[in-house]
Amino acid sequence: MTRTVLLTGGAGYIGSHTFVALVEAGYSVVIVDDFSNSKPSVLTRLGRLTGLNKVEAYEGSVLDDAFMERVFNAHEFDAVVHFAAKKAVGESVSYPVDYVETNVGGLTTLLRLMDAHDVRRLVFSSSATVYGDPDIIPIPESAPRSYTSPYAFTKLMSEQILEQAAAADPAWAFGILRYFNPVGAHPSGTIGEDPSDIPNNLMPYIAKVAAGELSHLNVFGDDYDTPDGTGVRDYVHVCDLAMGHVKSLDALMASNLGHTVNLGTGIGSSVFDMLQAYSRACGKTLPHVVTDRRDGDVPVLCAEVDRARELLGFEAKRTLDEMCASSWHWIQTGAKE
Ligand code: UD1
Image (cartoon, rainbow, N blue to C red; front, side, top):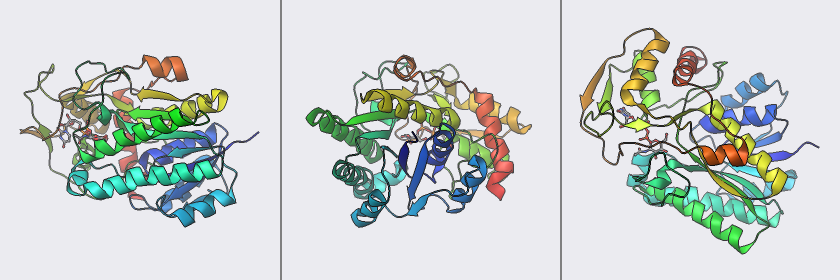
């Protein structure tokens, strides 16, 4: 029997890759997206990639009750995968109320509608940002949570809302997925990350240096207590991350038991590791300048991955070189279309 899934934010970076993975796994997927940080043309690309004649999609906001009610009335959903949210840490510091409204308000609107339509399974996009500046590396899911930005606050609050809802009513089953640093693109070059402004995050910034749009990478500090002095992160290929959502959904369908898991590789890479890997991918040495540390950055974030393997059978397999090669392929092909 085909299961039908509502995918909010399905035209976005991680959402679009997850759409492909869900369709390939046999799910029927309905997208809701307001295209505030994505383009409607992604839907055509998704059709091309999956071979579907029609990508079922609705344009609108998860905050719009009446719109969402129409979507829920038009389909019999078995589950929801919820991406639609704001994700820029710096912007959240300037507009904290907007972040609460969209990220937390979007979630509560969705939960009310799910409750009314008896849809009880939800996969939720959380972030390693809920660990703040962690004491233990690699970070186990049991580590204490905190927040260092309004964005992180909304993810922590969302997790807590889901925990309280599940405690109040065991019919709910939530898959809370804490992403480490998603990077790369679909190997076809058809979909990928497409920031319109100057990127804040490392890989999209390096990609623009490789493409000649920016002169050099600013390395935010080389005096951290790490092997080469630069920040260390757990970069995970977006296609591996997308598969993590399929595994999470499969687990919710099979057992109706919730889970909270890290999605990462368990391998830490420094800013210089990433710069070198991207230089290999694009075939030229990419220039950099070491600058001051960026406010709010922590030295090391790296996932403990045992729980995801044990509970979901999830393992992120793609290497840093594959992450960079797929990004470069996307930048040279799909992103230019
Ligand atoms: C950031 C967010 C995190 C969010 C994630 C989304 C902060 C503090 N954290 O994570 O909440 O979930 O993006 O992917 O913003 N770096 C440079 N030069 C650059 C850009 C980055 O040296 O131009 C360094 C950073 O100092 C860091 C590493 O590269 O050590 C990774 O940075 P980034 O890609 O922005 O990710 P996070 O800061 O880990």
